[in-house]
Image 1 (spheres, rainbow, N blue to C red):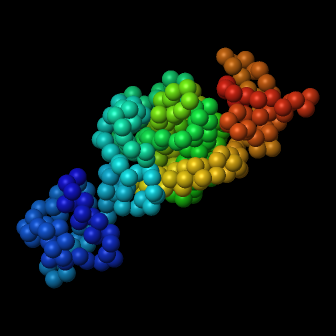
Image 2 (image 1 turned 90 degrees about the vertical axis):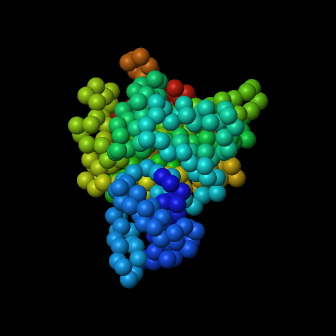
Image 3 (image 1 turned 180 degrees about the horizontal axis):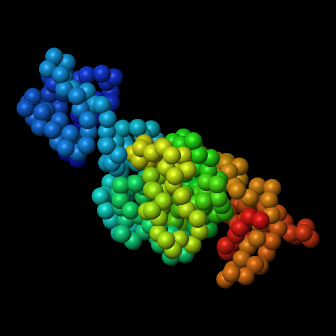
Length: 325
């Protein structure tokens, strides 16, 4: 979007009613004819803008598109989203963010795509990424922590997604260890975090987040390994994607700042409060074979799952597929 068009949108959002063409012309330092041309560009992009000769212009509605201006207009964080790159299509936002990070991108850099052609989930699984319906984003962080502490950021991401869902829909999400976001047992979001590190420190962590917002049933792949859903399916209400994106980035910013100031404890408490296994029995399996079962006992300082067996032994699960009985 042209910078001048973005500035016009900012003016519309700063006023509750009409903005005169003269005011826009003066604010942007362009002619009234140029203002009209930018208004026409916005209309072609799907913005509904009312024009009255004696009063000026008024924004009636905006299209559901992921552009930086729509998102940054409602960001309130201090770190995350200060540099925001919105793409129409890419192979993978994680790959893009990692390339930017390795080239020196500042902490808080965000890559968002309308569609991905090579979206990935955990363990190399495909993440279906159709255009126009969901949110696919990746965030560059540079925390001053040790590499073995980086998994804590996965739990931070999960809490942020849950908070954004609560704010933007009537749905009540839960979190399945370590980072699947569920609604009524069906997966609505997934996270894939990647790290570049040395022995004694982290170069960067890329938080990859995919949230199914407005997908319909027929848009899901037929070969899904687990039940999946979207906020639209569950609530029957469409989500404004730019607003959801801003809510998510704001939540990440708050949680990350708290994490840097107070450590993993507050994030851990928030994650456990939303866990789908609280007070329930769980089973961990590997290769389709059940290995350990026990009562959910929380997560430890590095995010490992804790299960208390019938014998009273506290088992620490680092990896594996888990399910609630």
